[in-house]
Image (cartoon, rainbow, N blue to C red; front, side):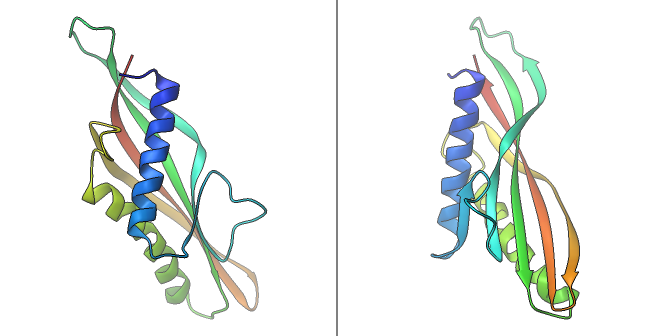
Amino acid sequence: MADRLTKIRELHTALLAAIVAQAPAGTAISDGWPAGAPQDAQLWLAGDVEVAEIEYEVTGLLQHVEQLVVEARIVYRTATDTHDDVAAGAMALSGYVEAAVHNDPTLGGACRFARIAKISGKEAVPDDKTREMGLTVTVVAECVVT
């Protein structure tokens, strides 16, 4: 069993490792905001975390279950005129997060069960030669903490 801060770090580390295992070599992935600025195709785990729900169980031990929320952020930028190209690139990156959680819902034992709760995003056209899409993949993990 671990306290909340330790469990959050365990969850981040396990989720990051699972995503890296799903992504092709060379995919830009980082824990926290990428150094400098995001690359044209970048995935990172946000440094912030949210406790969505705390459920106390009567087990005789000083432990409880919390739903910890972690966000994977994605930016995909390309020189294109079509929405389909930029959306396909961003969704391909989000697929690595989905596969990581689907293939091992306990994230190597870091939690009882993790799931994708939501995928949201926005498209932008910063200039007449570039489109970009930012996505947030929200992962909710049920964890036992002390």
